[in-house]
Structures are given as structure tokens and as C-alpha cells.
Image (cartoon, rainbow over all chains, first blue to last red):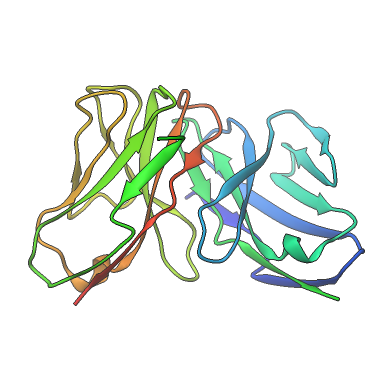
Length: 109
Length: 112
């Protein structure tokens, strides 16, 4: 079957660094997406990885290991506005996204 | 219109009633999607369309139907609503099926 696992909730301190992990099992693989979703709002696209390695985009970086079925999202210099849910999604061989349940990130001052 | 819009924003519906959720995008994206989001679960794909004139079933299609008569519009119809269809519904679009998806603001539907 197809499955995405990510922690339900994480807590971090303003100004710190946090890493949100995601493991996936899909029928075929066409890339790994990370989205941010603030409470009551729509998901917004953060990053896409299809090759192994680290992609950096400002304070956010995303890493992929295809052989391990593993990705992480790294958030640096945390700000209160980063409090949100972070959704991991893997694209399968039919180009459909399989979504994790999301990781709720709580930032404390 | 800028991006992707959905209507209504929220709706309370009696069980057994028919309901159509509307979705319109102005980005000329080929692919469109309908998801439902329930607490503790990931987004689940209901139906999708890779291009105007074609549609496909997602993970949870039962009780829902869609049409894609043109590029911009992708309505989702509940023929006879049931309480288990209470959810937040998101419409999304992407340039093609292998690109990042852009989401509408969502419709919060309650079926009583």
C-alpha cells in the first residue's frame, strides 16, 4: 500500500532550528512535496525534491533520500508566523499526490 | 479573479440534498483536483482532471461526481449528501499533472 508518515506535532522555540521528518512508501515515485498550512487556510507550496540531496530556499530547506524513502524539511531562524501544519506529499507513478496527515508545529517565544 | 476560487465558503446542508461546490481558476492550468480534508487525516483525492474534457477517480470518489467542460471550471457535485461527507473541501490546480498544485481557499461543508 501507499503510506506517508510524519510526526503529529512538534514544538520549537523562536529563533531556533527545527527538522520535520517524513517517510514514504508509494507505487513509483515522481517527487516529494512540502506544503505549509496555517489553521483555517489552504495549503501553500514550499518545496519539491525529485533528486537526492538538499534544496535550500531562504530559511527553509528540504532534503530527499530516494533509497531510504525519506525526506525532511528544515526551518531555520524560526519566527512565530511559522506556527502552522507542514504537509509532506509524495507523487506516485500515476502523478497523484499521496499526503501525510501533517505535522503541527508550535513555536514558543 | 486571481488564482483559484471556490464557492460557497461554507454551507450547512440537510442529508439527502444535492449540492454543487464550485471551483474556478484563471491560470490556464491543465490539471485540476478535488480533495477533502478531515481532522487527523491527510488530504484525500476525490476526483481529478488532467485536461479539459477528461476526469478520473481518486482515492474516495463514492458519492461525488465532477465535470470538466472547459479549462477554468471544475464543479464537484454531491448527489445525495450524507453526514460522513461533512468535511473541508479543497479544489486545486496545476499547470500539468506533475507540477506543484495551487489550492483554493476551501469550502467547509456540514451535512446534518
